[in-house]
Length: 489
Image (cartoon, rainbow, N blue to C red; front, side, top):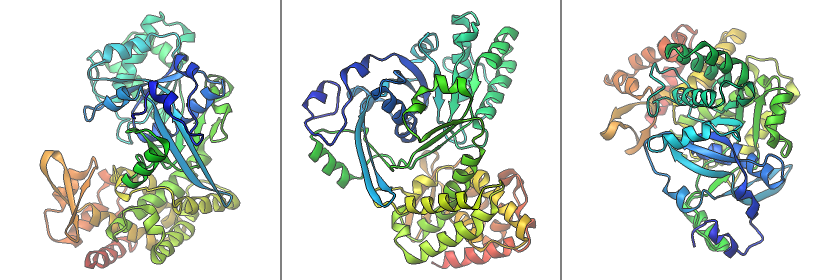
């Protein structure tokens, strides 16, 4: 039996929280760019929880922007999906199973752009959310009257312009726009790109005024490990126990945080924030960003290649290894935490650090290192380079664990071009796919067999890092030595 609205009445288990019938009649208040598991497992989770409590009372229209994949599973399941969350909180096991009814429709930008513009003209619409990965928020000089525009900022501008025209520039028709891409000041950067694109398209001055004065672009950050679908064994067990098949089911850890930069007016619009302490709406989210970006994401990024090249497929597998645990503990406590370029109370930092390690040890989450490696070079640039530079500023010496993490990254990015635009790496005769906007550069630089030269070229590449890492005292030598050790196996 497939999960669907019709089949909900056939599900007979108290272990799962089912959506009430009236939830399907709620108006569409949110337009969301992205179908990914993070959005479904965090923002949509909070919205669904609020709807169940009679607070936000609005559903989500999802825009599928990419040409890959289909929306067939969403259509077959009436956009319903199960969220399985499990973890350790204060030493106790906590678990939750819910069927989310947050999503009302999934529309393809390529094939259903008119329907998306219809949503833009709706008086019910209040919020726009996005997650288009770190490389999605960038300026593409294009005509936003295309059907549809190519870039996410182009699509967003087209939606906002359509709304402006539908409401004749009414100030109350503005929206709250919350990007969740993991870049610093994501809201401000998205707003700047949209404004520049509007200027390039020579849109009228009255629209520009409305765009700036009536819409609120909010910086935000998301923090929840959502690996995605259960593995085959877990999926079979859950479906057998619960009595239905769900091709959209996702696993998530119990911990969740969505920090949004905003004032009381933003809080009023985002009323779903009332139902869960994981939603934090505050005028300044810098503390949350630094803790999450450096201690969680930075640690993940620096450990990713080293763990994968060591034969560990998941974070939990790596944390079960005593040597790896020693490495990650030294990295996070002795190098990352002291190098965070933001003043953070030691007690707060230590508490967050311990929570991070506990989350890594979560036995119920299968978080694969290859998934973490997506857009690896961008993550290194955003998450790690500021830590590395600040560590040198404070100590003027090589951070050994960071050097090892960087060496492993360079070895991991030893790739060759494959079929269909893919890039392939190889370790111990095992091939793996690398998804990275800079993969072509790494394939080119690795055309030589001189690894010392490759390392020097990568480290001094200012286009990659916005800094010449080759001038850091001893860093190139340390990375080269660690690379040679890793390469020996």
